[in-house]
Length: 132
Image 1 (cartoon, rainbow, N blue to C red):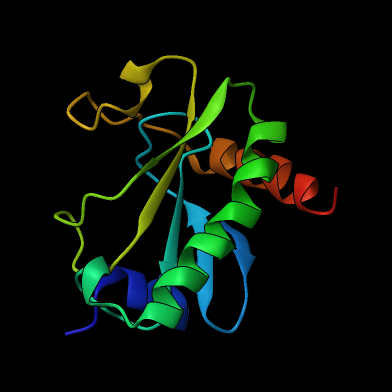
Image 2: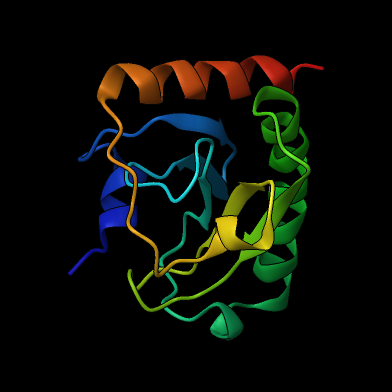
């Protein structure tokens, strides 16, 4: 059975896309732990990040490295935090989270409830920064 992320890649489930190429996709987390929380995934469904082929694994991090500066320019923060947990969705992914403090990347805190309009505004702000 395809993961929710594979369904996003195929277009079965809508998302707030930030950046995409033939191998990777970055999109907003719809239940973020911070405004501007972005998920970066390989389009190929691989459950465990350390089971990825080296080229795909390295490419995922290089792709994330292109997205992070755009988030940082769009969302006021000190840095972009990186987390890989891998328990919640059986599809390898990287969390990019705008940080003011180390507590901002605590996945045990309650998820934010953000309406579709605000998610779209956040996505638009980040996408606008990709061209810079």
